[in-house]
Length: 294
Image 1: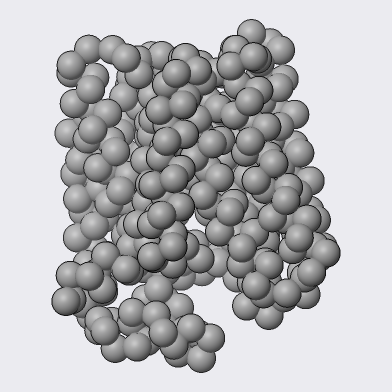
Image 2: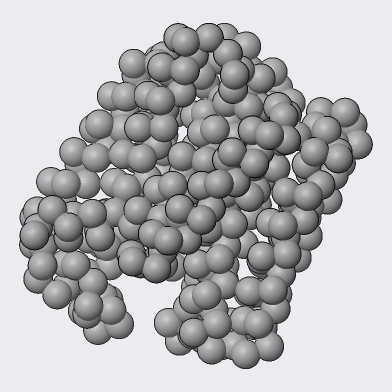
């Protein structure tokens, strides 16, 4: 029975979105359909990000214990289903596995994985409730996760590819801004600014496509889907600025990382690979019905 509670603690739907980051990074450097050795490294990086993301979520709940006793007493740790010590050991093991899997790909991958773990801990312990440091730190975690996927080709990451990491930084900042009012509401300004950041992401992607770095017609349907999901959810959260709608905007923002990553895959690789990544979305949605996302 405890095994199930460990699984609940990791928020599996979110972990699927992290795996899509890796596939997007691999597509950006152009080897999504490459050799068997590359395939092994892709699998290792997917396992690495699963460990890193799940570990970050576990430590988030550890550091939020006192708050969750009041605001979310049904969660695994405050409800006593798992002790804080059990969660602590579990979180360290997840980080250890994540970094180890990454090191098996390259030293660069291991370094990036270590940075992700460090920034996740900084966010969970110190930056989470800061209006600027929180969105920036969480955005850095996702940007580095995209770079982790790119590190599958450690010796040939061009400068323009590194710049792609700024896109998830901007969007995750938008999600984090939205989440800062998910319990009490009254955050119309934050959600409105988050929607502006979504517009900015679309402009950047279209600019990259116009410059020839991505295929415009391949990327357009995916980025339209991504923006539509977020626009509808955030517009409702602005119009009805209550916890229910804000939490839904955060949830849809997290899940929509899959179509955002699918747009990179389609733009840099092939629209059929983009569809394959997009198929992770219904899996993540099904998991979100069973497990918490926010």
